[in-house]
Image (cartoon, rainbow, N blue to C red; front, side, top):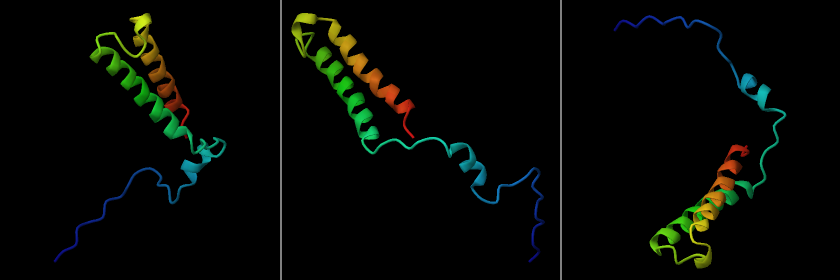
Length: 87
């Protein structure tokens, strides 16, 4: 059988990972607890909001009414902001 012609690739090709490593060298790696912490905060905020909606505003803290939504969203926002710093 005849072999198909090899195509020429335009531009330069990276032969190894030197291009990728050059811009990531100075960035410190996140500690091991970082990822579990932000996942926990995201889930805790979600559970807080779910409990508030399902209970009709009676739980988690009944005396502050709609501020429960603010607390749940704030917990989730802290978790989301932690995801932006994860390396």
